[in-house]
Image (cartoon, rainbow, N blue to C red; front, side, top):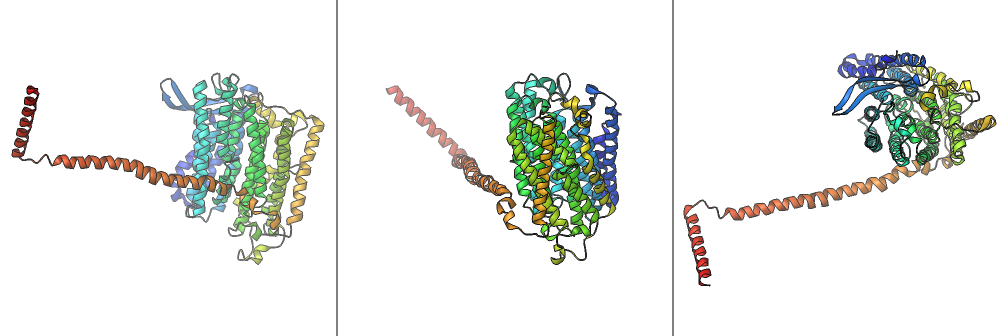
Amino acid sequence: MLHLAFLMPLLPLAGFAVLVTFGRRLGNPLAGWLGTATVTGSFVIAVIVFIGLLHRTGDARSFTQVLFTWIPAGSFHARAALLIDPLSMTMALFVTGVSALIHLYSIGYMSHDKDYPRFFVYLNLFVASMLVLVLANNLLFSFVGWEGVGLCSYLLIAFWFDRDTATTAGKKAFIFNRIGDTGFLLAVFLLFGSIHTFTFSGPHGIFAHAGSMSTGLATAVSLLIFLAATGKSAQVPLFTWLPDAMEGPTPVSALIHAATMVTAGVYLMVRMSPVLHRSPDALLVVASVGVATAFIAATIGATQNDIKKVLAYSTVSQLGYMFLAVGTQAYVAAIFLMISHAFYKGLLFLSAGSVIHGLDDEQDIKKMGGLRKYMPLTYGAFFVAWLAISGVPPFSGFWAKGDVLMNAFADNRALWAVGLITAVLTAYYMSREIALVFYGDERWRRLRVIKGEPHESPWVMVVPLVILAFCAAFGGLLNLPFHPNWVVLDHWLQPVLGSVVRVPHVGIGGEWALALGDAVAAFLGLGVALGWWVGRSERPALEPAFLRRAWFYDAAIDRLISRPSTAASLVAATDVEERTIDGGVTAVATLVRATGDRLRRIQTGFVRNYALAIAVGAVGILAWMLTRASL
């Protein structure tokens, strides 16, 4: 079974190749069904490989499949190889599963788009790249997938490239990710220069050397990897590209936020946990940046009016929780929250897409209201996701987020306090959104947003909602606390992370108290938001410009970085390049040409002139010699 692993990335890659070649001929909907079938096939293969891995025990749950030698250079060989272990298979399962549902949803959502086949070309390549990233057995091969998801995110965010806002958002995502990629490459170079390997596991791999690494080397590598993760997973200060990515089609938003792209940074940090474990300072930086990102994004999300931007800032905030978990060495908690987040955030985005579809592309929640009567299935799905992300027990978000906060409490009380406040804000902004979209008066009717009434989505869009709603509701069963036999995910990931995970010591009473505090935080945020926003769509005092405009972060970047760098580039282009460099080159050329013009006058081409010059020269030489003789 394990030898089928290569088919996981190969199937969507083959779908990409077929759709590039024949997509236009297949048209709508065959191109969509082909793309969906390849990703679904990849999910089936992932399940088969998972079962094969499950039959092994303990440290034997690791298998390397070498595909081919990628870069042979003397004694150096970089191989394209896959690492099949509990961590990579956990990622592969939810990446392929959620991506398959998003592909199915896209068949209906994108059915009227003129570039329908091209959309599925990009989606298939996106999934293939993400699978290469999470399955690669070395950093160099993983970087191929890392760059692949970066490229595909640019192509999909800017999919409607005839819109200026979409092309700008695509370029912004691409540039911000390139900043992070610098950290990835520097970390790779530093590691190879120090321990002469790119490979994760094995007797000569990175993890075998991690225990003997100096603290300085571990800190440098950890912070460089974190820089890479900051770009890909949208953490402060490189987070503003993700909300702007909402310019892409809604299935793209779901794919980026739930199954691919933004989870890549968290995965990389967890994969490199043996190195992180050597640097307490780097861990503190990761946890601090993560909780700061979670809080800042939550405050911004509480004031947005675009139904997708609320969810986008929510993703940034939830990713901050995952990095808080990584920084407190709660790596299993980070993966647990990542899986739960994939379920309920994918459900939220697809439900939001259903709302947008039913309202003829309207995205302003202030123009909605009362939709639960017209879109009951979409409302039910959104309702489940709302309770899950808000942390209401017994939904998955309660257990996953609670796991993160419990570990933070055991490690650093200040970080835990900020995380708990952010949990209240999370419940608040999600309750505000559901109140404005599904409750209250029907503002869409008064504002004439659509002709007729909102309508439910077709079955290809509803089926993924039902499946994801089930997963969001019961996903917490993966890792229930309070009993050793219930922490399934802990046991599953133990062979990979067991040596670096720090076990929190809060006691059974502490666990119950913290769980109660998490539930109170969730209900507090829900109660306040519903009390303030049900039946009322305008509260300017709760939506200050400072928060609506994302703490003026983009404006600050524009003023402090973009404009000065643009002015500096103009100076460089005119004063330095044109006047100094080009002027210097031009001056040398002018001098040579002028000198040549003067010398050319001597070369007349007449023999008599040359004879006269020779005679004059000879007389001059003779006169000089006579003068010297007389002396």
